[in-house]
Length: 67
Image (cartoon, rainbow, N blue to C red; front, side, top):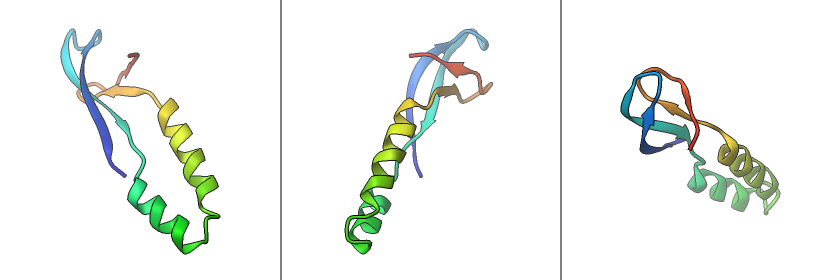
């Protein structure tokens, strides 16, 4: 599983920092969907929704950053 990264201001560190959140491994989910005849598609959609709602975190202090 990869990470999405961007730059934002962290109030805790009081500076511009790199923020991250977990991403979805679409290649892995595609392979599993093909191997299971499409049944894995339900899990893939749920994983994408959960990862979309996950919060960004400062890469230095770990505090949640709201975009």
